[in-house]
Each structure stands twice: as C-alpha cells, then as structure tokens.
Length: 354
Image (cartoon, rainbow, N blue to C red; front, side):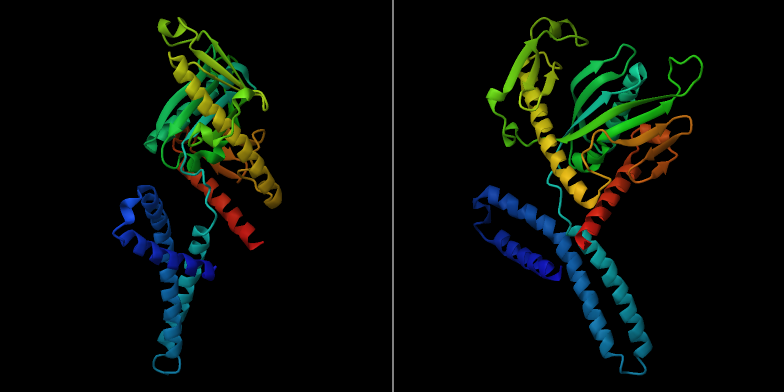
C-alpha cells in the first residue's frame, strides 16, 4: 500500500507542475482532466502526509527513550502516534478502494407494482414520493419519463429520471423487492395485507452511443398516447414504444407531446437498461466470488420490509431495523443509505484482505 501511496504523492507533485505551466490551458480537455485528478488526489495525499508525520513522531520519541527523564513522556508519545497511524491506515485503505465509475451519474428509477393488486400500486406511489422527497433533500431534479396509473391511484409502473451529483452512489442499493405490510384503505375488516413492488436503479449512460445498440436490432412503434395530459397529447401518434429484439427489453414513452422527444427519452432509458443488464451480470459474478449481500444485482431478492402497524422498516441484507417509518416514507433515507454504503465498503475491504 505504501508504494502505491508514494506513487500517488509523486503524481500530485507532477500535476502541480503541469498545472502551473504557462501552456496548461492551451488544451482545455486535458486541463480539466488534470484538475479533476488533482482534486481527487489532494485529500488522499494529505492523509498520507499525516500518516508519515505520525511515523516520524514515533522515530523521534524512540530516540528519547534512553533519557530517564523523558522515557515516560516518550512512551506516551509513541502510543499516541501508533494509534493515530492505525486510524489513518484504515482511512487510507478506504480511500484506495476501487471507485464505482457510475457513482456520480444521474439515474433512471423504475418502480413496478407486484403482488397485491391495487394496494401494490398505491405502495408504488408511496415509494415514488419517498424517493422524490429524498431527491429534494439532496437538491436533485426529478423528471417523469413514463407512468402507467392504476384505477385507485398509484402506479402499475412509473419511471423517473433523477438528475444530481452522486444520485447513483446514494440510491444504487435500492434495487430489489420492497414488501409492505399494512391495512389497505380498501380493507373493511381491518386486516393487514402484504404486497410488494420492485425497484430498479439504473445509471444513465453519458450518451446513448456509449452503449452499442445496432439500429437493426430495434423495432420502433408509434401509437396514440393515453391517460392524463390533456387533449393535445392524444391527437397524434406521439407515444413511442422501442423493442430491443436481442434482449426483449421494451421501453415506452408518452410523456411529451413530441414524438421526437419521446423517442429520444425512450432511447436513453433503453441504453440505461442495457447498461444495467451488463452491470448486473458483472455484479453477480463479483458477488458469487465474495458472497456479497449488497449490490448483487438480483432484482428478485426481497431486500426490505415496510411494516406500517409497527412503524418499522427492516433491511434484510444488513439486518438493520429502524422504528422511524413515517420519517423514512417522507424521504429521510440518509441513515439507511449510509448504513448500506458502509457495509458495502466493509465487504470491499475484506475482499482486499483475502
């Protein structure tokens, strides 16, 4: 690890010199890449410098051990510096973990009603509100891509685009089965029902061209939009359905009155879904190797239960139970997302030690 850190420290010095050069801004793309790399390396190297200073403090204190008057003080200094080095080493290991290249991307968030009929669709609406409120807390934008409303409110399926720095990093562990236990509004006997929804969180591709999609593999259909949106949305064949023949992935978009805009949005969702399939295959292979409970990409896995009568949320992957369901449903997900990220980080650290 120390050899790697020495290399990174030398690289930071090199970047300092390159950025100070009079011609540094002659190539703006190169300049932006260097400033981004410099910003990433700066905190890591600063931590490494602190680690080295603690090592120097130990060496200095050891020289004082031979002096009877200074021996007790020197021993205390050594113990304190060793504790500091141990803490800094853990932080350095964490900072050296491989970064998820998708962490800073925008996402497409899909919520689908599952078992439970109308109650499941209502819960899909509740989940959408929960994620929308969480997005507002993070000052992200939420754009509706497409929706299929249920008769009693809620959604059979809804797709939104979440735009904001770190959206994927904070929500990537939300994919999977979400189960709800509560008394539905339509239940006259007061019995608790169990229903479920599935959530898919997909990083947005930078450009559709990033994903290799052969136009010959696409079937594109246009049709008259239905549902809410005013009369203008129903007068032309503005809705678009794209089928990716090799995978069978189907994307529909009818939110805009413009067929061109609907097609462009549908292509973005299609690219994200294809990218997501590739990502899940990769995650499943990694999970099989390290027996990961988080980020396995398995959408069929029941990851969480929302028990309304007890005000309880349980995430089954990390055995975390929180009795603050009202706050969570209002978008207070920080404790939950932080716990999932910390567990995933611990898995990565354990994998490095194997």
